[in-house]
Amino acid sequence: MTTRSPSRAAARAASAPTIRRTLLAAGLGLATWLGAKPLRAAPKTLRIGYQKYGTLVLLKARGTLEKALAGQGVAVAWSEFPSGPPLLEALNAGAIDFGSAGEAPPIFAQAASPELRYVAAEPPAPRGEAILVPKDSPIRTVADLRGKTIALNKGSNVHALLLRALEKAGVPYEAVNTAFLAPADANAAFVRGSVDAWAIWDPYQAAAERATGARTLTSAEGLAPNRQFYLASRTITETAPGLVVAVLDAIAGVDAWAKDNTAAVAAELAPSVGIPAAVLAVALERQSYGVAPLDAEAVAEQQRIADSFHALKLIPKPIRVSDAVWTPPARNG
Image (cartoon, rainbow, N blue to C red; front, side):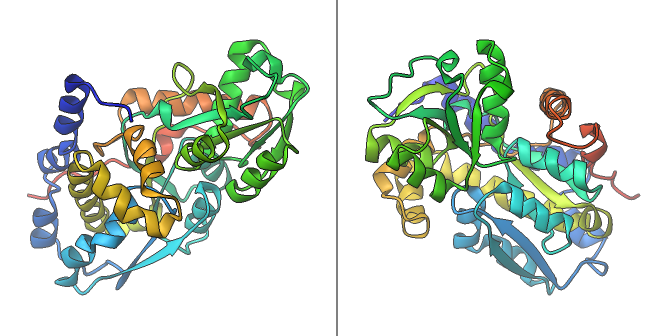
């Protein structure tokens, strides 16, 4: 297991309460919103989409958000999704109010609808996604992928990683074959040998490394940040911003606990994820913690990905990422 250096641990510890401090500085602490602006316009149920792995799973298991909203008469409904793209399709369709996804899914979602809003992000975690090849594969460099078949989830965070890796290696995107498969199907294809490589994220990445001895052709280090974004519907940010603040505050609390309790988090997640705790611990060491508002660097990086996707005609029109970034309103009075 990788051991974090004291400087990195200190940085993560310092970043965990950033969202809380920022919202308080803007006059948008949960207590301020709930006290000064009761949730009269809020829905009776806040609908959250989550994936099998990540902070939202822990938030669901710990029940802290339900406790925070119970006094306001707001319930929380949770819906599980296999990956970011279908989760954000549901958000665009009005089926959920809040969720999380990696870098690429919000770009596809914004290109399809003006409903999506970026509300926060975790710090980069580039070791948490990679392009894998079988342990005995003759493929040794990204350049060797020319003419080969790569499994990936279309529109997911690893779609952006693949573009960057190929670009750096001087391989045109059109020079590789892409097999768009959900993680479970991609894993089966990878094990069978019907694809040459697999672009995938943790914890599936860690599971493949442990189960098959899969070799990392390249991680996202030096290629893509691999940020986790928190996203909400435009409707909920406009009609009930206090609910958004409540969720982010609860996420900050879970982050603060999780960053120093890897073994406990792995044990808690293992039953729902279906991956042994020892494997999850490896993935968690590659995860980042410290939810905060998007900074200029995050927005600029997303814009670069969006521009690349448009140039390759993966999205139908150019988008401006900054149009979808939520800015908490100033305190009344």
